[in-house]
Amino acid sequence: MNLITTYTWVVRLFFATSCLMLNFIFSYAQQTEIIGGRKFYVHKVQPKETVYGISKQYGVSQDTIFYYNKSAISGIKIDQILKFPVPVNEKTNSNGEQKESKLITLKEHAVQEGETLYGISRKYGITVEDIITHNPQVKSGLKAGEVIRIPIAKTEDKNIGHQVQTSKEEPKKPLISEPNKEITQNKQEFVTIKKSNDCKEFQTEKKSFRIAFLLPFTSGGKTNTKIAAEFFGGARVALDSLKNLGLQLEIFVYDTRSKNDSDQVDNILSKPELKTMDMIIGPLYSANIGPVAEFASLHKIPVVSPFSRSDQLIHHRPYLIKITPDEASVARRTIKFFTTFYPNANYILVDPGTKKDSLMHLHYYQAIKNIAGKDTARFHFTRLKSGGALGAIRKDVKNVIIFPCSREITVKDYLTKINKAIEKADISFVGTDEWLEFNNIEADYYENLNLHIPTVNYANYTDSANTSFIIKYQQLMKTDPDMYAFKGYYVTFQMVSMLAKYGEKTCECLHEKIEPPLQPVHYRFQKENDQDGWENQSIQMLIFRNYRYVMQNY
Image 1 (tube, one colour):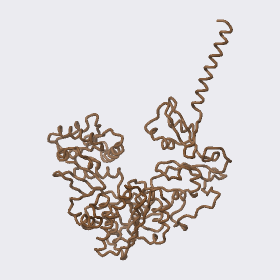
Image 2 (tube, one colour; image 1 turned 120 degrees about the vertical axis):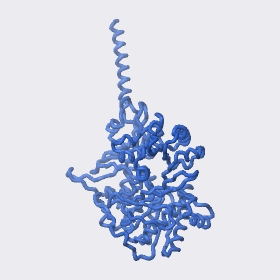
Image 3 (cartoon, helix red, strand yellow; image 1 turned 60 degrees about the vertical axis):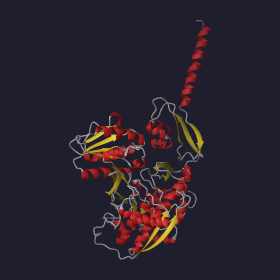
Image 4 (cartoon, one colour; image 1 turned 60 degrees about the horizontal axis):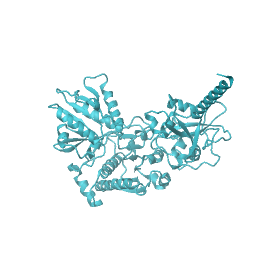
Protein backbone atom coordinates (compact mmCIF):
# COMPACT_ATOMS: atom_id res chain seq x y z
CA MET A 1 0.00 0.00 0.00
CA ASN A 2 1.65 3.28 -1.10
CA LEU A 3 1.41 6.65 0.66
CA ILE A 4 -1.42 8.04 -1.56
CA THR A 5 -3.54 4.92 -1.09
CA THR A 6 -2.98 5.05 2.68
CA TYR A 7 -3.89 8.75 2.76
CA THR A 8 -7.08 8.14 0.74
CA TRP A 9 -8.12 5.27 3.09
CA VAL A 10 -7.56 7.45 6.19
CA VAL A 11 -9.62 10.31 4.69
CA ARG A 12 -12.47 7.93 3.85
CA LEU A 13 -12.38 6.40 7.36
CA PHE A 14 -12.38 9.89 8.93
CA PHE A 15 -15.31 10.99 6.75
CA ALA A 16 -17.33 7.85 7.54
CA THR A 17 -16.60 8.16 11.26
CA SER A 18 -17.57 11.84 11.21
CA CYS A 19 -20.90 11.00 9.53
CA LEU A 20 -21.63 8.38 12.15
CA MET A 21 -20.80 10.83 14.92
CA LEU A 22 -22.99 13.52 13.33
CA ASN A 23 -25.85 11.05 13.00
CA PHE A 24 -25.39 10.09 16.64
CA ILE A 25 -25.38 13.74 17.74
CA PHE A 26 -28.37 14.67 15.61
CA SER A 27 -30.32 11.65 16.84
CA TYR A 28 -30.06 13.05 20.37
CA ALA A 29 -30.59 16.69 19.42
CA GLN A 30 -33.62 18.30 20.96
CA GLN A 31 -35.92 18.59 17.96
CA THR A 32 -39.05 20.70 18.43
CA GLU A 33 -42.27 21.60 16.65
CA ILE A 34 -45.20 23.89 17.38
CA ILE A 35 -48.45 22.10 18.29
CA GLY A 36 -51.54 24.10 19.18
CA GLY A 37 -49.51 27.25 19.64
CA ARG A 38 -47.09 25.61 22.08
CA LYS A 39 -43.57 24.34 21.51
CA PHE A 40 -43.16 20.55 21.87
CA TYR A 41 -40.05 18.38 22.03
CA VAL A 42 -39.99 15.59 19.44
CA HIS A 43 -37.87 12.68 20.65
CA LYS A 44 -37.05 9.48 18.79
CA VAL A 45 -36.47 6.63 21.22
CA GLN A 46 -32.96 5.16 21.07
CA PRO A 47 -31.84 1.66 22.11
CA LYS A 48 -31.81 1.06 25.89
CA GLU A 49 -33.54 4.38 26.64
CA THR A 50 -36.17 4.59 29.40
CA VAL A 51 -38.89 7.11 30.12
CA TYR A 52 -37.05 8.03 33.30
CA GLY A 53 -33.85 8.76 31.37
CA ILE A 54 -35.69 10.77 28.71
CA SER A 55 -37.46 12.82 31.40
CA LYS A 56 -34.09 13.70 32.95
CA GLN A 57 -32.58 14.51 29.55
CA TYR A 58 -35.30 17.06 28.78
CA GLY A 59 -36.00 18.30 32.30
CA VAL A 60 -39.63 17.20 32.39
CA SER A 61 -41.53 14.78 34.61
CA GLN A 62 -42.34 11.21 33.63
CA ASP A 63 -46.03 12.08 34.17
CA THR A 64 -45.76 14.72 31.43
CA ILE A 65 -44.36 12.18 28.95
CA PHE A 66 -47.03 9.62 29.86
CA TYR A 67 -49.86 12.16 29.62
CA TYR A 68 -48.97 13.27 26.08
CA ASN A 69 -47.96 9.77 24.93
CA LYS A 70 -50.52 7.26 26.23
CA SER A 71 -48.84 4.33 24.48
CA ALA A 72 -45.68 4.90 26.56
CA ILE A 73 -47.52 3.75 29.68
CA SER A 74 -47.21 0.14 28.54
CA GLY A 75 -43.56 0.61 27.52
CA ILE A 76 -41.55 2.42 24.83
CA LYS A 77 -39.97 0.94 21.72
CA ILE A 78 -36.90 1.78 19.65
CA ASP A 79 -37.64 4.48 17.02
CA GLN A 80 -40.94 5.38 18.73
CA ILE A 81 -41.68 9.13 18.48
CA LEU A 82 -42.53 10.89 21.73
CA LYS A 83 -43.91 14.43 21.81
CA PHE A 84 -44.23 16.50 24.97
CA PRO A 85 -44.28 20.25 25.72
CA VAL A 86 -41.14 22.28 26.33
CA PRO A 87 -41.23 23.26 30.03
CA VAL A 88 -42.16 26.89 30.65
CA ASN A 89 -39.68 28.31 33.15
CA GLU A 90 -38.00 31.53 34.09
CA LYS A 91 -35.86 31.40 30.92
CA THR A 92 -38.52 30.51 28.35
CA ASN A 93 -42.00 31.65 27.45
CA SER A 94 -44.97 29.45 26.53
CA ASN A 95 -43.45 28.84 23.05
CA GLY A 96 -40.16 27.70 24.54
CA GLU A 97 -38.34 30.87 23.42
CA GLN A 98 -35.82 32.75 25.52
CA LYS A 99 -37.09 35.65 27.57
CA GLU A 100 -35.97 37.90 30.35
CA SER A 101 -35.50 36.01 33.61
CA LYS A 102 -38.08 36.63 36.35
CA LEU A 103 -37.95 35.69 40.00
CA ILE A 104 -40.38 32.75 39.78
CA THR A 105 -40.19 29.00 39.80
CA LEU A 106 -42.66 26.58 38.31
CA LYS A 107 -44.34 23.77 40.15
CA GLU A 108 -46.00 20.84 38.36
CA HIS A 109 -49.63 20.16 39.22
CA ALA A 110 -51.48 17.00 38.14
CA VAL A 111 -55.07 17.93 37.41
CA GLN A 112 -57.61 15.93 39.41
CA GLU A 113 -61.06 15.02 38.11
CA GLY A 114 -63.47 17.85 38.84
CA GLU A 115 -60.79 20.54 39.26
CA THR A 116 -61.21 23.92 37.55
CA LEU A 117 -58.86 26.75 36.64
CA TYR A 118 -60.60 28.91 39.19
CA GLY A 119 -60.17 26.32 41.94
CA ILE A 120 -56.50 25.71 41.12
CA SER A 121 -55.78 29.46 41.01
CA ARG A 122 -57.28 29.87 44.49
CA LYS A 123 -55.31 26.89 45.78
CA TYR A 124 -51.97 28.45 44.78
CA GLY A 125 -52.89 32.11 45.33
CA ILE A 126 -52.49 33.17 41.71
CA THR A 127 -54.85 34.25 38.93
CA VAL A 128 -56.44 32.20 36.19
CA GLU A 129 -54.51 34.36 33.69
CA ASP A 130 -51.24 33.24 35.31
CA ILE A 131 -52.11 29.59 34.72
CA ILE A 132 -53.14 30.21 31.10
CA THR A 133 -49.96 32.23 30.44
CA HIS A 134 -47.82 29.23 31.34
CA ASN A 135 -50.21 26.61 29.93
CA PRO A 136 -51.89 27.97 26.76
CA GLN A 137 -53.48 24.60 26.01
CA VAL A 138 -55.84 24.88 28.99
CA LYS A 139 -57.89 27.56 27.23
CA SER A 140 -59.96 24.74 25.73
CA GLY A 141 -60.48 23.10 29.13
CA LEU A 142 -58.68 20.96 31.70
CA LYS A 143 -58.36 17.18 31.49
CA ALA A 144 -58.00 14.84 34.45
CA GLY A 145 -54.39 13.61 34.64
CA GLU A 146 -53.00 16.55 32.67
CA VAL A 147 -49.81 18.02 34.13
CA ILE A 148 -49.71 21.83 34.16
CA ARG A 149 -47.11 24.34 35.37
CA ILE A 150 -47.94 26.65 38.28
CA PRO A 151 -45.85 29.86 38.65
CA ILE A 152 -44.70 30.30 42.24
CA ALA A 153 -42.72 33.33 43.41
CA LYS A 154 -39.18 32.84 44.70
CA THR A 155 -37.80 34.71 47.71
CA GLU A 156 -34.29 35.83 48.63
CA ASP A 157 -34.12 33.16 51.33
CA LYS A 158 -34.17 29.73 49.67
CA ASN A 159 -35.49 28.18 52.86
CA ILE A 160 -38.65 30.31 52.80
CA GLY A 161 -41.29 30.08 50.06
CA HIS A 162 -44.44 32.07 49.60
CA GLN A 163 -46.99 32.47 46.84
CA VAL A 164 -47.81 35.76 45.17
CA GLN A 165 -49.69 36.79 42.05
CA THR A 166 -47.24 37.12 39.17
CA SER A 167 -49.56 38.68 36.61
CA LYS A 168 -48.95 42.37 35.88
CA GLU A 169 -52.65 42.81 35.20
CA GLU A 170 -55.18 43.44 37.92
CA PRO A 171 -56.37 40.03 39.10
CA LYS A 172 -59.92 39.10 38.29
CA LYS A 173 -62.32 39.64 41.13
CA PRO A 174 -63.20 36.15 42.36
CA LEU A 175 -66.75 34.93 42.18
CA ILE A 176 -66.83 34.77 45.97
CA SER A 177 -65.29 38.01 47.16
CA GLU A 178 -65.26 37.33 50.90
CA PRO A 179 -63.93 33.80 51.46
CA ASN A 180 -64.88 31.95 54.60
CA LYS A 181 -61.97 31.98 57.04
CA GLU A 182 -62.02 28.19 57.04
CA ILE A 183 -61.24 28.15 53.30
CA THR A 184 -57.78 29.63 52.91
CA GLN A 185 -54.85 29.43 50.58
CA ASN A 186 -53.01 27.43 53.22
CA LYS A 187 -53.30 23.90 51.90
CA GLN A 188 -53.32 22.55 55.49
CA GLU A 189 -56.61 24.25 56.46
CA PHE A 190 -59.93 22.93 55.20
CA VAL A 191 -63.59 23.13 56.08
CA THR A 192 -64.52 20.22 58.34
CA ILE A 193 -67.82 18.59 59.27
CA LYS A 194 -67.94 16.13 62.15
CA LYS A 195 -70.47 13.34 62.36
CA SER A 196 -73.20 14.12 64.87
CA ASN A 197 -74.10 11.67 67.63
CA ASP A 198 -77.67 12.85 68.16
CA CYS A 199 -79.04 12.32 64.64
CA LYS A 200 -81.53 9.58 65.50
CA GLU A 201 -83.50 11.85 67.83
CA PHE A 202 -83.02 15.02 65.80
CA GLN A 203 -85.80 16.52 63.68
CA THR A 204 -85.35 19.88 61.99
CA GLU A 205 -87.91 22.56 62.71
CA LYS A 206 -87.64 23.81 59.13
CA LYS A 207 -90.87 23.26 57.19
CA SER A 208 -90.08 24.46 53.66
CA PHE A 209 -87.05 23.77 51.49
CA ARG A 210 -85.48 25.21 48.34
CA ILE A 211 -83.93 22.70 45.94
CA ALA A 212 -81.79 23.61 42.90
CA PHE A 213 -81.15 21.27 39.96
CA LEU A 214 -78.05 21.97 37.82
CA LEU A 215 -78.24 19.83 34.67
CA PRO A 216 -77.18 20.12 30.97
CA PHE A 217 -80.57 20.47 29.32
CA THR A 218 -79.10 22.09 26.19
CA SER A 219 -75.74 22.08 24.37
CA GLY A 220 -74.58 19.06 26.33
CA GLY A 221 -74.57 16.69 23.39
CA LYS A 222 -77.51 14.50 22.44
CA THR A 223 -76.73 11.74 24.95
CA ASN A 224 -76.15 13.96 27.97
CA THR A 225 -79.15 16.15 27.17
CA LYS A 226 -81.29 12.99 27.08
CA ILE A 227 -79.81 11.80 30.39
CA ALA A 228 -80.56 15.18 31.98
CA ALA A 229 -84.16 15.19 30.74
CA GLU A 230 -84.85 11.64 31.91
CA PHE A 231 -83.14 12.15 35.27
CA PHE A 232 -85.16 15.30 35.91
CA GLY A 233 -88.34 13.53 34.78
CA GLY A 234 -87.78 10.93 37.50
CA ALA A 235 -86.97 13.72 39.96
CA ARG A 236 -90.27 15.46 39.18
CA VAL A 237 -92.22 12.33 40.09
CA ALA A 238 -90.29 12.14 43.39
CA LEU A 239 -90.95 15.82 44.14
CA ASP A 240 -94.67 15.41 43.50
CA SER A 241 -94.73 12.39 45.83
CA LEU A 242 -92.89 14.31 48.56
CA LYS A 243 -95.27 17.25 48.24
CA ASN A 244 -98.18 14.84 48.65
CA LEU A 245 -96.56 13.72 51.91
CA GLY A 246 -96.76 17.31 53.17
CA LEU A 247 -93.36 18.78 52.31
CA GLN A 248 -93.24 22.39 51.16
CA LEU A 249 -90.75 22.54 48.29
CA GLU A 250 -89.61 25.37 46.04
CA ILE A 251 -87.76 24.10 42.96
CA PHE A 252 -85.17 26.00 40.92
CA VAL A 253 -83.84 24.56 37.65
CA TYR A 254 -80.65 25.76 35.90
CA ASP A 255 -79.14 24.70 32.57
CA THR A 256 -75.37 24.12 32.89
CA ARG A 257 -75.03 23.45 29.13
CA SER A 258 -71.80 21.73 28.00
CA LYS A 259 -69.13 20.43 30.34
CA ASN A 260 -66.56 22.97 29.08
CA ASP A 261 -68.87 25.93 29.64
CA SER A 262 -67.37 27.10 32.94
CA ASP A 263 -68.71 30.60 32.34
CA GLN A 264 -72.27 29.27 32.43
CA VAL A 265 -71.61 27.54 35.77
CA ASP A 266 -70.06 30.75 37.14
CA ASN A 267 -73.11 32.70 35.98
CA ILE A 268 -75.40 30.29 37.81
CA LEU A 269 -73.34 30.50 41.00
CA SER A 270 -73.43 34.30 40.86
CA LYS A 271 -77.24 34.36 41.05
CA PRO A 272 -78.21 35.77 44.46
CA GLU A 273 -80.94 33.22 45.11
CA LEU A 274 -78.50 30.29 44.89
CA LYS A 275 -77.05 31.20 48.29
CA THR A 276 -80.47 30.53 49.81
CA MET A 277 -80.76 26.94 48.59
CA ASP A 278 -81.11 24.09 51.08
CA MET A 279 -79.76 21.50 48.60
CA ILE A 280 -78.22 21.43 45.13
CA ILE A 281 -78.65 18.33 42.95
CA GLY A 282 -76.09 18.20 40.13
CA PRO A 283 -74.17 19.09 38.09
CA LEU A 284 -73.94 16.10 35.78
CA TYR A 285 -70.32 16.67 34.65
CA SER A 286 -67.38 16.00 36.95
CA ALA A 287 -65.62 19.00 35.39
CA ASN A 288 -68.29 21.33 36.82
CA ILE A 289 -68.42 19.90 40.32
CA GLY A 290 -65.32 21.76 41.61
CA PRO A 291 -66.65 25.34 41.60
CA VAL A 292 -70.12 24.21 42.74
CA ALA A 293 -68.61 22.28 45.68
CA GLU A 294 -66.51 25.30 46.68
CA PHE A 295 -69.57 27.53 46.53
CA ALA A 296 -71.48 25.01 48.63
CA SER A 297 -68.75 24.90 51.30
CA LEU A 298 -68.90 28.66 51.66
CA HIS A 299 -72.66 28.70 52.06
CA LYS A 300 -73.05 25.34 53.84
CA ILE A 301 -75.28 23.81 51.19
CA PRO A 302 -75.29 20.03 50.56
CA VAL A 303 -74.43 19.21 46.93
CA VAL A 304 -75.57 15.86 45.51
CA SER A 305 -73.52 14.41 42.62
CA PRO A 306 -75.71 11.74 40.99
CA PHE A 307 -73.39 10.12 38.43
CA SER A 308 -69.71 11.00 38.95
CA ARG A 309 -67.77 7.96 40.18
CA SER A 310 -64.25 9.16 41.04
CA ASP A 311 -63.55 9.14 44.78
CA GLN A 312 -61.14 12.05 44.22
CA LEU A 313 -64.13 14.38 43.91
CA ILE A 314 -65.03 14.21 47.61
CA HIS A 315 -61.54 15.05 48.92
CA HIS A 316 -61.68 18.23 51.04
CA ARG A 317 -65.29 18.85 49.99
CA PRO A 318 -67.33 18.03 53.12
CA TYR A 319 -70.63 19.26 51.65
CA LEU A 320 -70.35 17.02 48.57
CA ILE A 321 -72.47 13.85 48.52
CA LYS A 322 -71.50 11.30 45.86
CA ILE A 323 -74.27 8.85 45.01
CA THR A 324 -72.51 6.49 42.59
CA PRO A 325 -69.64 4.48 44.17
CA ASP A 326 -66.45 4.03 42.19
CA GLU A 327 -65.39 0.65 40.79
CA ALA A 328 -63.11 -0.12 43.75
CA SER A 329 -65.99 0.43 46.18
CA VAL A 330 -68.24 -1.84 44.08
CA ALA A 331 -65.62 -4.60 44.23
CA ARG A 332 -65.20 -4.25 48.01
CA ARG A 333 -68.96 -4.19 48.58
CA THR A 334 -69.45 -7.26 46.36
CA ILE A 335 -66.88 -9.26 48.32
CA LYS A 336 -68.46 -8.10 51.57
CA PHE A 337 -71.86 -9.28 50.31
CA PHE A 338 -70.59 -12.83 49.79
CA THR A 339 -68.47 -13.00 52.95
CA THR A 340 -71.56 -11.91 54.90
CA PHE A 341 -73.92 -14.50 53.43
CA TYR A 342 -71.33 -17.24 52.75
CA PRO A 343 -68.55 -16.79 55.34
CA ASN A 344 -66.91 -20.15 54.57
CA ALA A 345 -67.11 -20.02 50.78
CA ASN A 346 -64.33 -20.88 48.36
CA TYR A 347 -63.40 -17.77 46.32
CA ILE A 348 -61.95 -17.89 42.80
CA LEU A 349 -60.99 -14.74 40.89
CA VAL A 350 -60.42 -15.37 37.18
CA ASP A 351 -58.32 -12.89 35.18
CA PRO A 352 -59.87 -12.62 31.69
CA GLY A 353 -56.63 -11.20 30.31
CA THR A 354 -58.35 -8.33 28.51
CA LYS A 355 -56.88 -4.84 28.72
CA LYS A 356 -60.28 -3.18 29.11
CA ASP A 357 -61.11 -5.27 32.18
CA SER A 358 -57.70 -5.17 33.84
CA LEU A 359 -58.62 -2.35 36.24
CA MET A 360 -61.79 -4.03 37.50
CA HIS A 361 -59.85 -7.26 37.95
CA LEU A 362 -57.29 -5.34 40.00
CA HIS A 363 -60.03 -3.88 42.23
CA TYR A 364 -61.38 -7.37 42.93
CA TYR A 365 -57.88 -8.68 43.55
CA GLN A 366 -57.21 -5.97 46.13
CA ALA A 367 -60.61 -6.44 47.77
CA ILE A 368 -60.04 -10.20 48.15
CA LYS A 369 -56.46 -9.75 49.34
CA ASN A 370 -57.67 -7.40 52.08
CA ILE A 371 -59.74 -10.18 53.64
CA ALA A 372 -57.74 -13.24 52.57
CA GLY A 373 -54.43 -12.49 54.23
CA LYS A 374 -52.32 -15.63 53.97
CA ASP A 375 -55.30 -17.94 53.48
CA THR A 376 -54.58 -19.69 50.19
CA ALA A 377 -56.93 -22.60 50.84
CA ARG A 378 -60.14 -20.60 50.23
CA PHE A 379 -58.89 -17.77 48.02
CA HIS A 380 -57.60 -18.51 44.53
CA PHE A 381 -56.32 -16.28 41.71
CA THR A 382 -56.30 -17.87 38.27
CA ARG A 383 -56.03 -16.88 34.62
CA LEU A 384 -58.49 -17.68 31.86
CA LYS A 385 -55.65 -18.90 29.63
CA SER A 386 -54.60 -21.50 32.22
CA GLY A 387 -58.07 -22.99 32.61
CA GLY A 388 -59.69 -20.41 34.87
CA ALA A 389 -61.58 -21.74 37.89
CA LEU A 390 -61.92 -25.38 36.85
CA GLY A 391 -59.05 -26.66 38.95
CA ALA A 392 -60.02 -24.69 42.07
CA ILE A 393 -63.73 -25.61 42.36
CA ARG A 394 -64.59 -27.58 45.51
CA LYS A 395 -67.55 -29.93 45.99
CA ASP A 396 -67.87 -29.57 49.79
CA VAL A 397 -68.49 -25.78 50.07
CA LYS A 398 -70.01 -22.84 48.27
CA ASN A 399 -67.87 -21.60 45.34
CA VAL A 400 -67.89 -17.90 44.42
CA ILE A 401 -66.35 -17.43 40.97
CA ILE A 402 -65.66 -13.84 39.95
CA PHE A 403 -65.12 -13.20 36.25
CA PRO A 404 -64.84 -9.42 35.50
CA CYS A 405 -65.01 -9.66 31.71
CA SER A 406 -66.95 -7.34 29.38
CA ARG A 407 -66.48 -9.28 26.10
CA GLU A 408 -69.60 -11.30 25.32
CA ILE A 409 -67.86 -13.89 23.13
CA THR A 410 -65.27 -14.58 25.86
CA VAL A 411 -67.95 -14.84 28.53
CA LYS A 412 -70.07 -17.17 26.42
CA ASP A 413 -67.15 -19.49 25.71
CA TYR A 414 -66.11 -19.63 29.37
CA LEU A 415 -69.64 -20.18 30.74
CA THR A 416 -70.09 -23.04 28.28
CA LYS A 417 -66.97 -24.74 29.63
CA ILE A 418 -67.93 -24.15 33.28
CA ASN A 419 -71.46 -25.50 32.77
CA LYS A 420 -70.10 -28.72 31.31
CA ALA A 421 -67.56 -29.22 34.09
CA ILE A 422 -69.34 -28.24 37.31
CA GLU A 423 -71.35 -31.47 37.78
CA LYS A 424 -73.04 -30.88 41.16
CA ALA A 425 -70.85 -28.15 42.64
CA ASP A 426 -72.54 -25.27 44.47
CA ILE A 427 -71.58 -22.14 42.53
CA SER A 428 -72.42 -18.45 42.54
CA PHE A 429 -70.97 -16.78 39.47
CA VAL A 430 -70.23 -13.02 39.57
CA GLY A 431 -70.24 -10.99 36.37
CA THR A 432 -70.31 -7.27 35.55
CA ASP A 433 -73.16 -4.96 34.62
CA GLU A 434 -72.09 -5.14 30.95
CA TRP A 435 -73.59 -8.64 30.97
CA LEU A 436 -77.06 -7.10 31.19
CA GLU A 437 -76.60 -6.05 27.54
CA PHE A 438 -75.58 -9.52 26.31
CA ASN A 439 -78.02 -11.20 23.91
CA ASN A 440 -76.37 -14.44 22.82
CA ILE A 441 -75.80 -16.40 26.03
CA GLU A 442 -78.12 -19.21 27.11
CA ALA A 443 -80.33 -18.27 30.07
CA ASP A 444 -79.82 -21.83 31.36
CA TYR A 445 -76.16 -20.99 31.97
CA TYR A 446 -77.10 -18.01 34.16
CA GLU A 447 -79.67 -20.11 36.05
CA ASN A 448 -77.32 -23.08 36.60
CA LEU A 449 -74.48 -20.87 37.79
CA ASN A 450 -76.65 -18.71 40.08
CA LEU A 451 -75.45 -15.54 38.34
CA HIS A 452 -74.93 -12.39 40.43
CA ILE A 453 -74.48 -8.94 38.85
CA PRO A 454 -73.41 -6.07 41.14
CA THR A 455 -74.63 -2.77 39.69
CA VAL A 456 -75.24 0.85 40.69
CA ASN A 457 -77.74 1.89 37.98
CA TYR A 458 -80.63 -0.43 37.25
CA ALA A 459 -84.16 0.10 35.96
CA ASN A 460 -86.15 -2.44 37.95
CA TYR A 461 -89.54 -2.82 36.25
CA THR A 462 -90.54 -6.01 38.09
CA ASP A 463 -90.44 -4.73 41.69
CA SER A 464 -93.96 -3.86 42.87
CA ALA A 465 -92.49 -0.96 44.86
CA ASN A 466 -91.76 0.77 41.54
CA THR A 467 -95.22 0.31 40.01
CA SER A 468 -96.55 3.67 41.20
CA PHE A 469 -93.43 5.48 39.96
CA ILE A 470 -93.61 3.83 36.52
CA ILE A 471 -97.26 4.77 36.05
CA LYS A 472 -96.72 8.39 37.15
CA TYR A 473 -93.64 8.75 34.95
CA GLN A 474 -95.50 7.41 31.93
CA GLN A 475 -98.31 9.90 32.55
CA LEU A 476 -95.87 12.80 32.97
CA MET A 477 -93.33 12.06 30.24
CA LYS A 478 -95.46 10.00 27.79
CA THR A 479 -92.78 7.30 27.65
CA ASP A 480 -91.35 4.49 29.77
CA PRO A 481 -88.67 5.35 32.35
CA ASP A 482 -85.11 4.18 31.74
CA MET A 483 -82.36 3.73 34.32
CA TYR A 484 -81.63 7.49 34.42
CA ALA A 485 -85.26 8.22 35.24
CA PHE A 486 -85.16 5.59 38.00
CA LYS A 487 -82.00 7.19 39.33
CA GLY A 488 -83.56 10.66 39.28
CA TYR A 489 -86.49 9.30 41.28
CA TYR A 490 -84.37 7.41 43.85
CA VAL A 491 -81.81 10.19 44.35
CA THR A 492 -84.35 12.99 44.70
CA PHE A 493 -86.76 11.08 46.93
CA GLN A 494 -84.10 9.87 49.34
CA MET A 495 -81.92 12.96 49.52
CA VAL A 496 -84.83 15.37 49.97
CA SER A 497 -86.26 12.98 52.60
CA MET A 498 -82.91 13.22 54.44
CA LEU A 499 -83.05 17.00 54.14
CA ALA A 500 -86.60 17.08 55.51
CA LYS A 501 -85.48 15.18 58.63
CA TYR A 502 -82.06 16.68 59.33
CA GLY A 503 -82.24 20.12 57.68
CA GLU A 504 -79.06 22.07 58.41
CA LYS A 505 -77.53 18.93 59.99
CA THR A 506 -77.88 16.83 56.82
CA CYS A 507 -74.12 16.61 56.19
CA GLU A 508 -73.58 15.65 59.84
CA CYS A 509 -76.11 12.81 59.79
CA LEU A 510 -75.69 10.96 56.50
CA HIS A 511 -74.16 7.99 58.32
CA GLU A 512 -77.57 7.25 59.80
CA LYS A 513 -79.72 4.87 57.75
CA ILE A 514 -83.02 6.29 56.60
CA GLU A 515 -85.29 4.11 54.49
CA PRO A 516 -88.16 6.10 52.97
CA PRO A 517 -91.34 4.12 52.28
CA LEU A 518 -91.81 2.39 48.92
CA GLN A 519 -88.13 2.75 48.05
CA PRO A 520 -86.38 -0.47 46.92
CA VAL A 521 -82.99 1.32 46.81
CA HIS A 522 -81.46 2.63 50.02
CA TYR A 523 -78.18 4.50 50.29
CA ARG A 524 -75.45 3.87 52.86
CA PHE A 525 -73.04 6.77 53.16
CA GLN A 526 -69.61 6.92 54.69
CA LYS A 527 -66.72 9.38 54.80
CA GLU A 528 -63.03 8.85 55.49
CA ASN A 529 -62.50 11.94 57.65
CA ASP A 530 -64.03 15.25 58.70
CA GLN A 531 -62.52 17.11 55.71
CA ASP A 532 -63.96 14.87 52.99
CA GLY A 533 -67.41 14.51 51.52
CA TRP A 534 -69.72 11.49 51.64
CA GLU A 535 -69.80 8.49 49.29
CA ASN A 536 -72.65 6.04 48.96
CA GLN A 537 -71.38 2.47 49.43
CA SER A 538 -74.54 0.51 48.62
CA ILE A 539 -74.93 -1.58 45.49
CA GLN A 540 -77.84 -3.40 43.90
CA MET A 541 -77.08 -7.10 43.62
CA LEU A 542 -79.03 -8.64 40.74
CA ILE A 543 -79.53 -12.38 41.21
CA PHE A 544 -80.69 -14.48 38.25
CA ARG A 545 -83.37 -16.66 39.78
CA ASN A 546 -86.23 -18.50 38.05
CA TYR A 547 -85.08 -17.00 34.75
CA ARG A 548 -85.35 -13.36 35.78
CA TYR A 549 -83.28 -10.88 37.79
CA VAL A 550 -84.24 -10.30 41.42
CA MET A 551 -82.72 -7.19 42.98
CA GLN A 552 -81.28 -7.21 46.49
CA ASN A 553 -80.16 -3.89 47.90
CA TYR A 554 -76.93 -4.20 49.86
